Image (cartoon, rainbow, N blue to C red):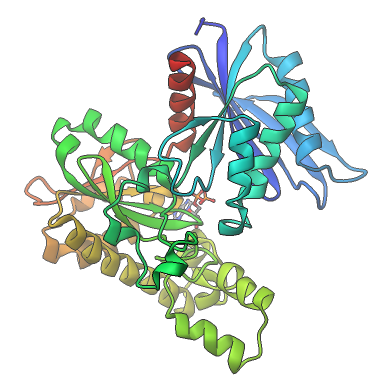
Length: 397
Ligand code: ADP
């Protein structure tokens, strides 16, 4: 890869396409931006350089645009605004790779057709991840594309960690635990040993706490268990998702309350979690600023459930050497970290209160000097992980 070569990382959701540009073999972050409000409202595009200066801006006031038009715009923008850079590859975040994709893949028609078959497993996300891949194949077929899967690192978990206690005929259909947020955990596993070499072989529980939230147990950097399961609605309570639920509740909603599939899905994915319990907001900042007891109850439930999962994941690991906080809440909420660590004292977690209160930017240890379990904050960086995978794939090709 030459110095003026670059890699673009695409993270496409249902209504937005986020992108990041990394320069040269060192993968220096140079540019990031997004197109938001696809399909509804006023579609907007903005791109900023690493200093936060706006380098591109546009809005579509007449009518919203779709993924295909959004990608067409981004490709034109890249061709005209990249100061002589050459885009050598595009890496995509792809939520689901099933059990066959345990690492990144070069995306061609065949792989995309295989991934299409997984859409029933992730109908809310996968079609949006694949739309930009298809657009790129049509509009810029000369640029190699690499798919990086949020499920990949979990494929190597022990069979018991992946199985539901369901009849084999159902399991064989692919109904099993996949775990998500894998690119975030992979980045954390790669970053920790640079902060402390001993962590390379440690038993670590990482908590990625953003709008979506999950936890993962890693032994020597390998995922052994995770809280998200068949879908990204399992495990911890999240901004608007309920997390782990007795399946009997779903039967009750259908049988007794007469709810149909769409109504149940809306309830579990969009109306539950911090928003549902508080009745106020899905946003942790709003809840932390509120005096309302319902806001307190929502935060307390999240802290409680993190503590329960921590015990469970420590059991899966057979011990615990380090606890890592990541994601918007994990990186920023002093109070939530303090509460989780207080409840985890029985595991040997002892926080350095001043270090936590300082709310460090970047990778930092926030446990007390004598703490049996080290506590770290590691800012999430899935984009860099995808750029690294994409570069490695180019070098292997
Ligand atoms: P996503 O999962 O969409 O990438 P983020 O990782 O950005 O989300 O996390 C969003 C969450 O982080 C929101 O609940 C937001 O309130 C929370 N958050 C961001 N900054 C702070 C802060 N300073 N204090 C507490 N929570 C914060």
